[in-house]
Length: 319
Image (cartoon, rainbow, N blue to C red; front, side, top):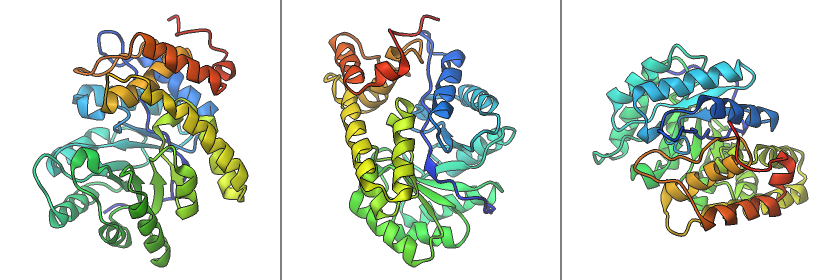
């Protein structure tokens, strides 16, 4: 069963995984990205999530990412890791492989591919929790696993000490507000982190404890400023930061010939290349990188939102 620890709140970006042109983990770019997040003031880092393209990585690549991230962070902020796979035994194997790293907990989705219901999902989380003493966060991402985690079930898992919090990437603002209200009524057994990066302001008003924004890889400092403003009740500053981040998020709509991660994660990688943090915008196969006029439009948005000026970037990293 997971043990309790200091709740993880604030800004916890889901770390991207930079790749070489050949598709290997680009360790120098990864170290630059971690440094960029730490300099931006983030409260934690979530490695091996959907934004990190975890579904494409074999065990060796997963371990390479964790070794590089934990070594670079060196205890400065908590690091949590996705142990995401289709079924329970495989998830526990990922937990076992990750035990040698300095991690503050694991992030677990519902099982997928095989059709499951509430009973199987409950058994899955309890089995993974029983296999580790480190905290678990439930990752609600129905677009990928085809099952929505119900508020009542999440709260029961929290009350039973199975999970410590929820990373909500459902895009279901009604469901998130219901979960936040029920969590408060139950004495807040869960910490709630939203992954819905352009409505973080609304999530804070609903009761979120922080955010896990993919766009936070590009502009961690903006999300940190918004979080701090929310904690002090400066809602005008929250609105200004969210409006600017929403304008920056337009980068994901520029590659009109791509969908899903190829567009979203691909845009984040392209932006980081243009900021001089990544060497390439290579994607995991079979996805292809963003090229051509889409790159020009992404760079224009970076310029319009002040990102290029802040970074002092004149172009892609020359490494």
